[in-house]
Length: 48
Image 1 (spheres, rainbow, N blue to C red):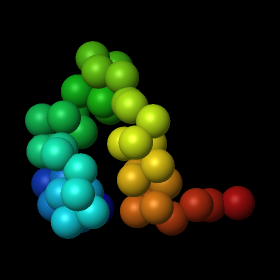
Image 2 (cartoon, helix red, strand yellow; image 1 turned 30 degrees about the horizontal axis):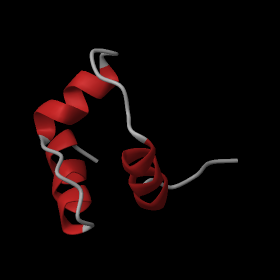
Image 3 (spheres, helix red, strand yellow; image 1 turned 90 degrees about the horizontal axis):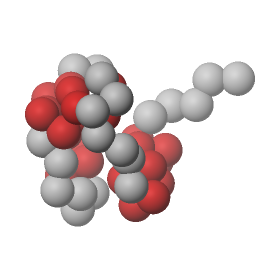
Image 4 (cartoon, rainbow, N blue to C red; image 1 turned 90 degrees about the vertical axis):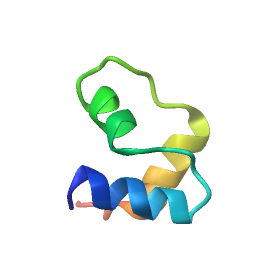
C-alpha cells in the first residue's frame, strides 16, 4: 500500500493525515499519537 493510499484510507476513517505525515512518521521525524496508532492498527493487517 502506498503512503498516499494509506493516507486516503485514514482520512476516510476520520484521521487528518496526508502523505507527508506518513513520511514523517516513517522517518522518525514525527511521533504517532494514540488515536493515530489505533487507526493504523485497524487499517494494517497484522502478521503473526
